[in-house]
Amino acid sequence: AQSVTQLDSQVPVFEEAPVELRCNYSSSVSVYLFWYVQYPNQGLQLLLKYLSGSTLVKGINGFEAEFNKSQTSFHLRKPSVHISDTAEYFCAVSESQGAQKLVFGQGTRLTINP
Amino acid sequence: GAGVSQSPSNKVTEKGKDVELRCDPISGHTALYWYRQSLGQGLEFLIYFQGNSAPDKSGLPSDRFSAERTGGSVSTLTIQRTQQEDSAVYLCASSTGAETQYFGPGTRLLVL
Image (cartoon, rainbow over all chains, first blue to last red; front, side, top):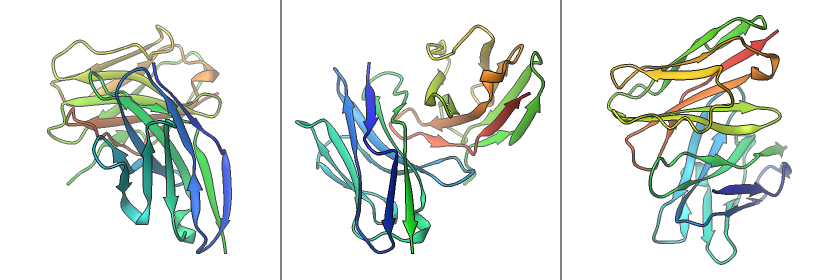
């Protein structure tokens, strides 16, 4: 079984500042890793994913994440945030084989202050 | 193209009533997933359909929950004898069976 821990439930930052949202996972099998964003009263939108290959993955809206196998981490970063980035961010993992059902972290609420 | 759609967007029901939630996946997607998002439990997997295979029901919380997928397309999640703890947002996702799941907007269920 897999599990995901998002270390911060809330992260407040000022506009144009950099941000890092932390995610650690555990699994005994090979996994895929994802970051999803949820804007208020909307469904989940995929930001980026790691399947294999380069450990630095780039996603939409200027976000990127780095897979670190030794630390079992997949932290999300953005060098300069905008007010429109205010949302809830979910890290998720799935087995690379089989049903690929997603196991989610508890979410991190990112609040951008002007 | 059209994304995953879900209906109704909101549902208010009384404790003990049955409810049906509908999901229309992206055309051509063979895999369909149901998840539940609640304040206490976060986002949790409920059930998974892939083509004509038997569904993976390992996430259903009780036998009051069931789901079907007709013709490999539309899916209905049914909750019988609803309880207040069933109040949540029910999310549907579909995929081609390879990695990325695309989510619908969800159905917000409130059990009074």
